[in-house]
Length: 341
Length: 266
Image (tube, rainbow over all chains, first blue to last red; front, side, top):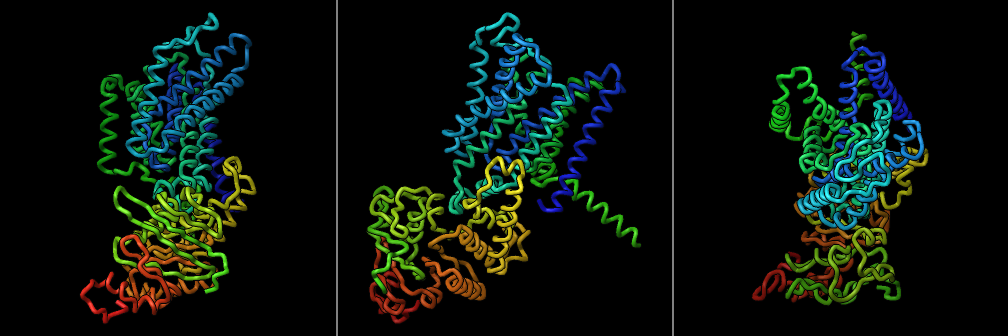
């Protein structure tokens, strides 16, 4: 590993730890008192939104294909993980961390497999056509979940149309670490030969093929990874909210994810990381702090979207990445020159 | 020509039909090691279509083609590249938003070994391979005097440099045969000279055979060893540059029938 990279990684690791400590300062010391649980929830929502928005950004920003069906993959992750953990916790009592890990694993893998199966035929298409297919897949999943009850195996939970009594194991400590790991994996994927091939395909499919890149394979791989992390987000959601309703994962949810990607800047992971918590948690926070605003929540959301699209059509970050090490470098350089003067 | 040698590329009665139109019909071309072959013809003669057939973008309706004796029909584009045919495009197709360096590094992708897991876990092997690839890519850029632009976006390069970058990217695929599709199109005389030097340098350094489509006759006549002339999808004539320049049919195809064809090098 090059020396400079080592330094950059160290800075990022420190930043991640500082973030973790800040969160635990907020929630574990009880500064917030009664409101603690509420803010806790907001943070978890912000974090699973970050994961799914980043995963969608892989498709939209880096592969250049739109998916309007990510809520579908999310619901697969949510339902699959919820079924498994409910079955398990009926049989044995597992510590919450183990149950959480099982949930994440099952949810991600299930969504990944479905993503792979959908990807093989669908990724021969591109552009509008692929977009329609993703919408269709998400709708199929939603309709299946709302109409076919999964037979109740145990008495403790009612499977099927809505699904209640899921273990609440999505603790923000775990979720925070999951989010960091997910983002790291996606970042490494993009900054590798796979990511280069992916961006080349976005830029020019024919030239990419003429440079020896297997276009279909790269696309299917990326689609699978994207669905995988959508499943992760679904698993976190299921074990935070504890009750699943199929209609939550509808078309407007998918388009909300896409809106956040574009607002943050498609092709910028940091853009998604900044935009996702703001657009998912902030409207709720506003309505909580100023209850009079509650009914204007979606209005504010729409205004933010319109304003950003007018003044910054490429999104907040416009395809660029924010880099903490680079920022620090700038600061230290400034200080050094100031010191000389 | 030493006919006993195995041709690098052998095209046998290759043809493709779009509906009722025979865009390419019964084309035979042989390219031997180290040769620089010109492919000329009026606009719409089917030159680029032949390139698209060879690189697997179109599937031929008749005939076949072999690379070093290996049948290549039916392979998809990236497989063709893996077998060793690299090409550039008539209308430049660079990865515009990527850096100049990354444009070349992408083409090394097919020879890179690091797995998905190794890439994500950032194993030492991954770093070593990345470093090696960067080094190889920089060497290629240096050949074309592009190293100072390495960190710039490809779209910001001047036109002539974009052409050269496309050739550099094609070379990165480690090919046995290079197809250049009108590399001098839209270039000013200075850039054309630069290109000519680059092609000469390529031949000396890599000794790869090149199939060149070009409209700039002075360029074709001065560097090509043999020339094929294509008209309405069929080979009209082939031979040494001088033969082609004096061939009646060729002059007719370019200038029309009534002309006596005084300007043979037009």
